[in-house]
Length: 162
Ligand code: SF4
Image (cartoon, rainbow, N blue to C red; front, side, top):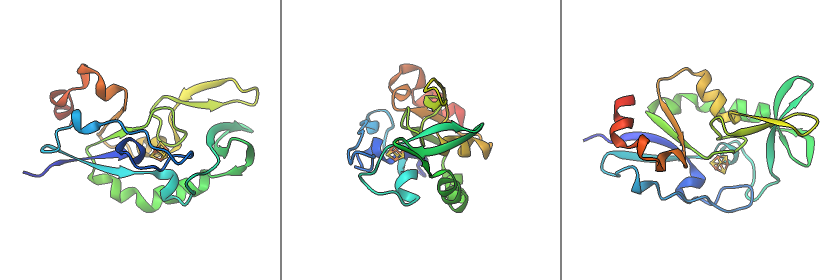
């Protein structure tokens, strides 16, 4: 039987790719039977060329434009770098029936990522990778590591989505 392919933020699979050189292992095999699902790692920040470890980045509104910038130096702007990586890789994402994405990340967050204003107030929206995925308008599910642990999102629920 062909397994259903799901794209997963690499740090949730235990890869030490975060800005601080650590992972955020989420033990997803407990929730996604490996006989049914194939979980495939994606780390937008590392794949687009950032180092491990690296200075942390954030989504920030600058002159009315939403940018992905370094927290301690907003002039270091990675928006175009991530856009370019996404454009080069978007066909690869067609294989996935869904995504499990690290919450709050400036790249991978799904409605949980702070977008900062000049006065440091913020609203929660998508990370840049997720907003690009959504712009593709595909019928896929997107959950974060907290949602997959809720009984409402069990295997039957997910299979009905795809
Ligand atoms: Fe990479 Fe996304 Fe994990 Fe950040 S949240 S380390 S970009 S996979």
